[in-house]
Length: 73
Length: 502
Image 1 (spheres, helix red, strand yellow):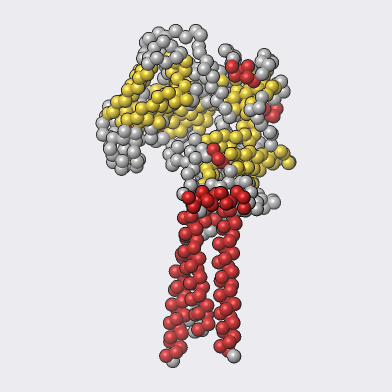
Image 2: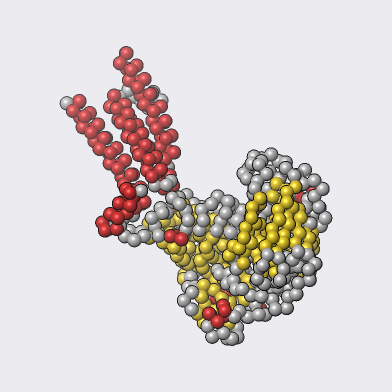
């Protein structure tokens, strides 16, 4: 795990931006789903986005910890 | 230098994210609004489809299969009816549904759409997919704008004439239309003996009776066994030629949970005076929580349309004290009987006039076919507890039986066309055929569907009389092309105005 997410501020930032984008997309799709009467849900796996956000948050926290440990060293 | 490179990477990444999100939202909006083209949904059974559901329920439909030789996927329908749904926004006004399928055995296949979106009721409008009887018929035909009349002997000169003066003693096969006509039985004389049915039946049933110079009077005694969640009102509709004349409703007993106990015997009476002579239909719309234990009427004729769910079994004794468990004999001229045992006690052979009809497992439909077309027969269910379906009415006594349709019955797999005199159907174009695969299309007017704001359409694939042990119907492709008037500035502006004003 540690080797996989080697301390990298750039990767950390990229993942953070990805999470923000997916959260925004998730909100937009949820609103659209209400507006378009469940049409989005049938076409696009919205629930999958929710799980993806959770996974990315875990990855982000691992990288954050790696980064902070590198800084201490 | 390194910082500048990182900044560039971050900006490129942001651009990718923005473009990706925009593309996803744009794709959804384009699919929904489809401003320049029709919405086309295709399901080729190779993977789980988007916007179209798989066929259901399992049991009537097998799992997806793959042909090992050519890699094609398909799904097989082995019992009817089967269902699927499609998510098509409300703004689309027409849907053309195309099936690609193999059909080695089944004579009739039709596709229906649910007109009334409701969780507990399916109101289908059927359209033709295939009718091999009509394709193979050599009878002379006449037609008008809506219907085609096939005549073994050309007695009628127009379809209108046939509908206005239907033959008195002829057998007519109908397809996709009921062709109700206010026909009367010239020979009928009321005997005023009345009828009592004490054999318990469960759930929705459709009854027919004949009225001549007498009031219609029915009394139903029933129990609400509260075995399923939800309300269980007892709703009766009196109809003639499909039109509702009067209705009445007994409310639920107040227990809407799964209490697994009844709140005692209930009674509902239905009476209507001054009815014209003719056939009347009583629709008993109730849930499977209702067990009707007693039917009493002043009428002399009483038949059940096409289904009787016999429920006189010890399994219900805890709900219905002293339930009548005496064997039930049903009289009919059905060309096929499909029976489903609802509990182990219902798994028993039925003695038919040509041999034994085995019902071997619970909740599996078994079909018996009548070797002689429309031959009247009867059978006895010693332990009841079977759900019986057929293509002709049933009665509990030979004397009560009558033909409420005057010989006009829907064509099905078991129809012997040689024994018919006429066939009357909606206009029909036979499917195309390439090798063993048929391609059939039918179009639905979506504006007729009451689905409020819900985008889901519910379809029903029906193959009347599809034998329980058949090869079934193998579907390899399903395409739905939904269309609407094209979106232009001129028609979008009034709509926007209307939306804003709302």
